[in-house]
Image (cartoon, one colour):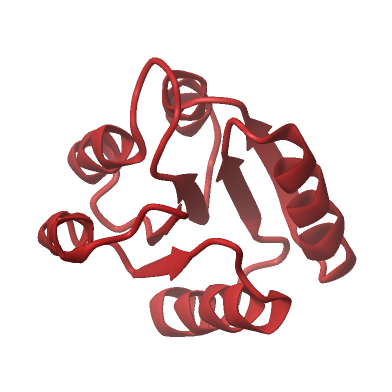
Length: 126
């Protein structure tokens, strides 16, 4: 069991990042925020991250590009892709990169919370 799980939230929407930080901090997570994919990768290289929530559409590095790099660097890291622009090709690409899950924005709190908890339980037994 993990003592304190670290959640990386990478999204260019500052309000969403802060809202998710508040929700998951209350649930006992250490939450680290990144405003784009490049910043998210820098954090993932330096810190122990247990799960990554990644937006699909971001400047500098898209969510799929970030997932591909995370898969190369940390293949065991569960990643959840979030997007308002989901279609079958995005879902297929996320599955090919072994994303743990894909969520359509706007998300309901119970959806994202449930998927994060499921991933933490399945991957870490937490």
